[in-house]
Amino acid sequence: MSENSRYSIIEGLTSKKLRILDAKIELEDEISKKEMLIQLKNKEREQWERSIKSSVDESREEKSREVAREKLILENLKKTKEGKVKSFDEKIKQIDSAMLSIEEISKASAKEASN
Image 1: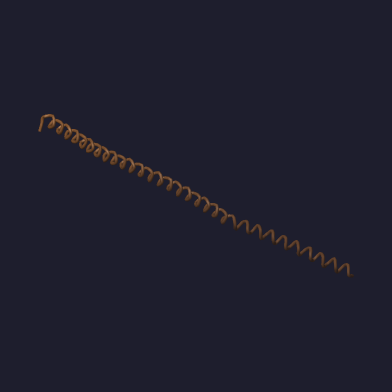
Image 2: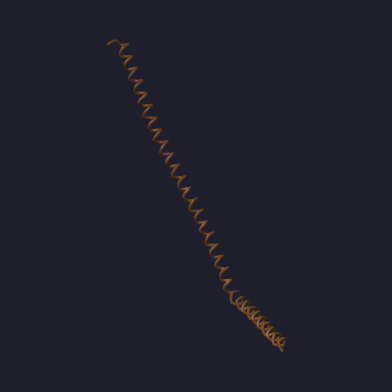
């Protein structure tokens, strides 16, 4: 084997070795990039979960305030109901009394007209 031929073989093998080393480094870089991407995606997911939880908590609190407000309105209605019912009943009695008086006047007028 000639020296040129050995030199050529060594040059080819060295070139091949460098390509393999480059591929190995690229593979390590790709793995490293994927690991960093996964970490980033996990952080984004955790932030999203915190944001969603916060939003749900705020909505839950708002709904609780709405329920409490409606309960307060109901309690106030219940407290004023008795007085209003008494007032309505009194007005009905007055109307019934007025109608009875009109009926009695009508009967008396009819008796006088027939006499």
